[in-house]
Length: 394
Image 1: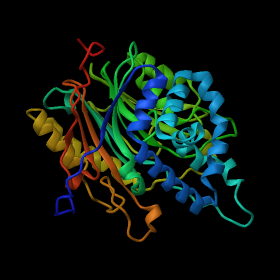
Image 2 (image 1 turned 135 degrees about the horizontal axis):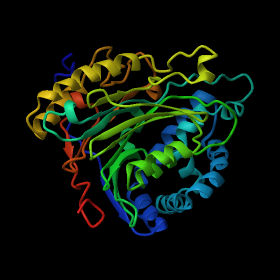
Image 3 (image 1 turned 60 degrees about the vertical axis):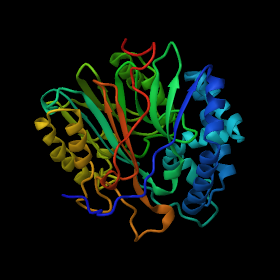
Image 4 (image 1 turned 45 degrees about the vertical axis):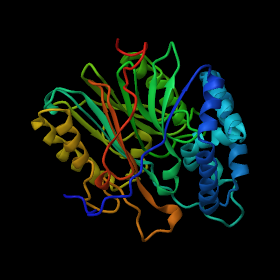
């Protein structure tokens, strides 16, 4: 389906930030660079959580302290990085930790128990996203591609930044994140890409790691086996999907839950995942009558597959980017389509949109993003190559 938009969006690019040094130094550089965006994010989530659960941000941040010890035990360097972010942005460590655990806050029922008497917590949709990997038979030009449409709350669009993290001896990372987050989606100088999709919910009361910590730890690895090991050995707080792609021409999708994981491989070099279980419904959910939290995911996935099959005829990277952007601009089911737009029937605080459409060329190292919906925006070619510097492929 052709994009509905007929007018180009106002010219806009995502801020690009580069940080390096010790974890604390990296964090301070990061916090100073995103101070306005981070404060805007705090203001948005304070309004959002107040509306949905009657919670003040102070109460959310205080409760987020439950993740401090687990994160410190697993990745003390990331606690130091978050401490530096807090210092640089002029906020508290628990404010930054809460921003990194905002998905966990949404799906953790213990937060609902903090509501004032008589208030009702609104059901929150799962984090939207449609991820893909394409290589081999699926890639006409022979390149390995990975990317996604990252769909989330429109109110945080101006808080999204692109960040490059130089952290020897670990790989150098490029990620798209909400200001203050230490991880989300991206790729590294070892040629590994991580794209992710929320699945919603948790199965018991155990405290696990926030997704931002898990995802960052995946991208901190220098080979695909170690990246997979992070996903298989860590216990996340909530369920989430991870699609791993590596430049050698391999991809695997893991539907990770606090209880167990399912996995999928590409078909003829193409793999697409959305926000519903595709490898198999976990027993805990099947027993209670599973229904996808994001019903539009059932449309987005096959539409992305259909559009991306055109890559087979591509003769080069420029044509491939055109094909991928066209595929990810599909509007069947608009506004909650593959290319997601705010639904005017909902209040502004509940508006969702495609914040970023990303495309990592793991063969060339080029990284492209759109600052918003791809249907009306061109790709922004980031100023960094994945393989630049001493920690790249050379």
